[in-house]
Structure formats: structure tokens, C-alpha cells
Image 1: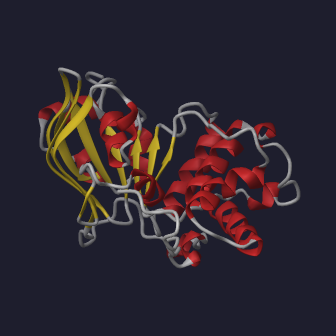
Image 2: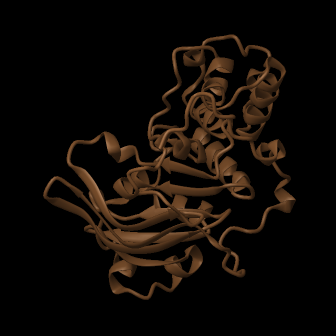
Length: 286
């Protein structure tokens, strides 16, 4: 249920959370370690578009402050599942879901869920960069101004910290008033990441964030994802299995709406338990 306008705005988390961390402080990708608590949990989760069922009884835990990659052939339900986590499918006529879907224990499917508040907690970066036709600064603060009551000095601080977290500050700090559409494709995508981080989310969803980028920009985004996972739970949909193996801690393989296998990324790619998974990651089909 949407809160009344006179309610006090939510408090931001510790703003230091958006600061980048040194590479030496980051745990190695895919390293064996105690499983952290689940940020997002699904039990018997199913979804439909009209009469067409696209997801079937998914049981999946997405660990807190790790990168989870969704892989599988086109049409297997990866993006649909991703978009249910922040209720992006609400705008699609006939879209519905059943089962349990929670964020840190809170139900995400109830009719009384405040979707605006949810999308502050769960940010999203799309396949193609989609900056607004505004200045670089206005792009970054757009969501923060919507969700919080902030003084100008606070907004300036948010802009710098979000752009630093997105590894873009040094490239744009002297032209914050310039049009965001004048940035390169890779810079635009990092700006979109900064825009998502500026509202201080708990989870960051990425739907093929590198598919429209050149190899150099892709490498920059991958390095950024590895860095951000220290402070955020990140879920990424990718068709690039090499990318999944490089940047994710856990990987979930989907086929025809079902979750076939989910495990630590190094195990899924080197010792899958299901033959279907082995066939897919080895390139026998897909």
C-alpha cells in the first residue's frame, strides 16, 4: 500500500555502501565459502502470460551480496523471473504469478506491496543503456529525488558517490551538466548503473547489461560487477556463458521454464550434476 504523502521519507542506508572497494579486499569469484543468507527466496514459484505458463515451480535462493547468473537458451524464462523480483511484469496484461517470492523475508507478490518502494530496494539495469534526455547529474539524482527529501548538498554527495561506485566519476566530473545522451555506449550503461545505485538498493538486477556493448566496455562493466558484489546482491541474466563463469558466484541454469540446476559457478561449469546442464555449458545445444 502506498504511503501517504505526508509520511516521513525513508532513511538511506549508510551512504558509504556505494563507495568502491579495493580489488585486494574482494573475495575471489566462485571461491568455496559458507553460504550467506538468501536475499531473494523462491518456493514453488510459477508464472504465466495469459494461459501460457513460462515458469514452473521454481525453488531458488539468491545469496546475499553475491552475483547470481541466470543462464539458459532464449525463451526459457530467465528475464521473466528477473522482472518478477521488482514487479516489472505488473504492466503486462495477463501476467500473473503463484507460489512464494520474498526479499529478506518480505512477501513480494501481495496486492498491498508498495511497488514504488520495492523498486527503490530492487534496482534494474536493462539490456540497452536507457539514459533520460537530461544532464548526467539529473540522470543520477532522478530516482533519489523521487524517493527521498534531500538538500542540494546531499544530492551533490549522492551524485559523486554513485558515479564513483559506477567507475564513471573521473570521466564525467567536469561535465555533469552535459547531456547524458552524449556519452559513449559503455559510459551510458555505467550511468544507468549509477542511477540505480543512487537510490541505495539492496538488490541490483541486470538483464543482459553487456549485450549491446563492445568488448572493451563489456570488460569495464564486468569489472564493475565484481567490485559491486561486495555491497550488493546482483542477479544477472546472460547468454554469454564465459561471462557467467567470469563474474558470478552462483549460476542457475533454466530450460523451458524449469530450474534444471543451481550451484556454485565453478562447480556448475566443471562438475554439473545434470546431463542437460553439461550438454548446455559444453555447447552441445543452445
